[in-house]
Image 1: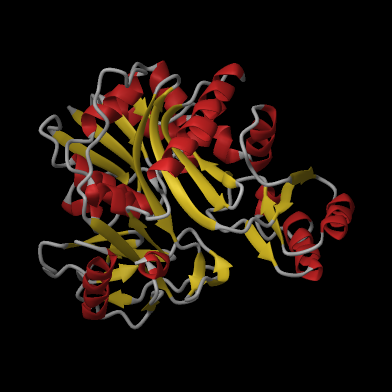
Image 2: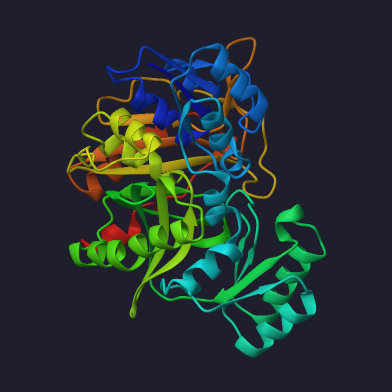
Length: 425
């Protein structure tokens, strides 16, 4: 098979690293890729949101499966366009990807189909939004309705902070068109985690769970980001919690999407809060999480391509759920200084491509190669240092040992990834 992976971040590097080992794959491309991905796939200079370019390349090169990494091209309809030319696409249609593309749609879906989530309101008028905040009080959560690269969620400790967030989003243009409509919801207390399932519109194959770290600073402080680290398995996911999530969240979500005329096909990422009242949906993503995908791919014990194909064909009932190794895998994100507001690009990174041993893998999230061969930062989240161990403590020590061996004065990372799992132990 010829396979194309769309995207150029750490998630896509992990997917390429995994897919490249499949005996079913003869040729692997990635568009646009990055400096690290080029070790596992041939990188093609086509942007992830250049829909016409991606479709034309796929047709001209006889691509048989396209694995769509980021949410942008999904919301823009890349899967639909590929299916129109009889090319299998792993990822939902534009009509189904709205489950991530609009937080307001996602909240309304939960309300219509009795899927547990936080109480909320949708607003296109700042005055009405502020009245809702005054009525509810703080802490409270203010979100852009549209896509904002994981940064359009503000947890506000006071009413004044929430009102400022409304102004920044709706009139200040802090998130562009994504903030023209906003969602305001109650602040949920509990432990946040991520559950993944491969679905074909009717059936679901549960994958492993993971837990990420959204805040930029140690102790879960500072701004929300796309994710500063992750680990899997997540101890919060007891067998009882998994059963509840599959029954009360995944199943009605699939039923609801089908009833809405947009059956969901691809990987369903359920971001949830384990509250005292049970699990509640925080968000849905229409693709693998980042950096959760990285830890899942390192734990994968078999070939992922058959299940990706089964999803793309619309029938996962005849394939076995992917097997995962029992070891714990942890990912520490190294980001460019200034992230998430104003990451500094172009700083030289040394030591990221050394041999760290059999238990460590470094995925590139935002890198490029200068003409002189130097590896430099080319994004906010730049490197994903992943390590496996017999438990969270061993995996964490191996990951941070590798981080210390990377010479990058222009970067930083959190020092406490995995703290919740360590506390449980």
